Length: 373
Image (tube, rainbow, N blue to C red; front, side):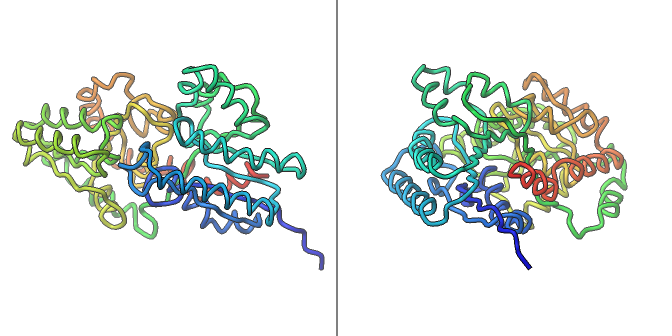
């Protein structure tokens, strides 16, 4: 019996480490059974930074790794001859210029062989980059010429409003693994909400990279304002630099918050799962984000979220799964409202169902296959 050949798909993407959103998505795409079943796939990893601290820094090793990716892409185009190409694109900086140079390979290739190209933007910042100079605008327009741009939500379309040469915009919300897979969720929330919260210390979670742009400093100040109330604040994430780390612990000592705050460091696996299960709410007052996976993870555990109006966050959260603030200085009010309206069984059930309906890995897989088709 004649077997129809599967389309050839070349994926050039980030994979862990370091552990950031684009790398997590790349890990899943490369291991996806559905995508590998639909397409004849090859994968090239974009290697640049080993840790969060290295992101954005220039080094000789990064130049070497860029050349290595260039050579691998050249060889794969020559020998594999894909019909489709997926690329995790960078929005600005040295990484953009690396991407620009590598893209010349498939731009030449597509002159001779038909190729559908997909750039997946996991963050925002294109608008800021192209508005900086006319050169940046011309380079970016050349980079995206005749390319399908994958965005995380329609709220991010304004970020590429200055571009005019791309082929189409495709929307693909991220998905994450089910944190409560193979567990009895109903039993878990019944135990969690067994006692009234006026007799219980509220467990407040901040889980993100320990960077000022993610809002950890505002959560720290909120912990100080709430230190005489029944709240305990948990911080989890890796540090961007040593300076912020010292300031964080200095603040805790200065304001005598040792009993009110626990810093868990970078967490994953069982430790991360336990922290989410123990949390009554997630605080995510970010000042620069596109589609934070932490919020999706929180919903999978039935944990409501207090976040800022940043990137796609208003798309992820609705009025029943959390609170979206248009002013980061209203965290105190938001915290009180979360406690009053969202720390209950009904809210937990709704958050988890919202995760299943919109942000599960199965949903992401199906959507990505449709994008490629």
